Length: 111
Length: 114
Image (tube, rainbow over the protein chains, first blue to last red):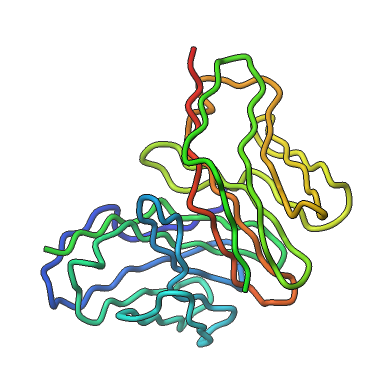
C-alpha cells in the first residue's frame, strides 16, 4: 500500500525553538505539499515542491521554510516556533493530475 | 485566484436517506476537482476527482459527485447514508493552468443518525 509517513504524530515544543517536521513518501511522486489544518479554516497551503530542490510558497509561508534534497523527502522547518503555529500539520504527495495521498498528520503544540 | 466554498458547516441525515454535501468553486481556467474525507483522528483520504469527461464521477465507499460547469458546483452525493459515513468532508480545486497548487474548502461535518 502506498504511503506518506510523517515522522511524529504529536510534538510539544517551546516558543523560540527550531522545529523540524519530516515527511517521506514511497510512491515516486514529483509533487509534495505541506498544509496546516485549523478548525473552521480547512487546510491552508504552506509550501509545496514539484521537484527535488524546487520549492514554491503557498498561501501562508511566513515563519516556515522547507527542504527537499531527495525526491521522497520533504521537510518543514519552523525557524522560531511561536504559539500561533500550534496546529495540525499535514504532508501530502501527488502526481500531476492525481489526488493527494496524505500522511496521518503531526499535531504540534507550541508552549 | 482560485477558491472553494462549502456553504454548510454541518449536514445531518438519517441512515438510509440520501445525502448531499455542497461545494462551489472559482478558478480562472479549467478546474480539477476533488473530494476528501477525514475520519476522527485520522488523515485525509482521497474519495474522488473530476478531471475531464463525464460530469458524474464515482468514487470510494459508494460516493459520487456531479460537476456542473454553469453553476460552478461539485456536490458530493450518496444514495443511502451509513452511520459510518459520519466524518469531515473537504472539497478541493486545482486550476489546470495554475500549476500544482490545490485549494481546500473549510470542510463540512456530516452526521448520520441511526
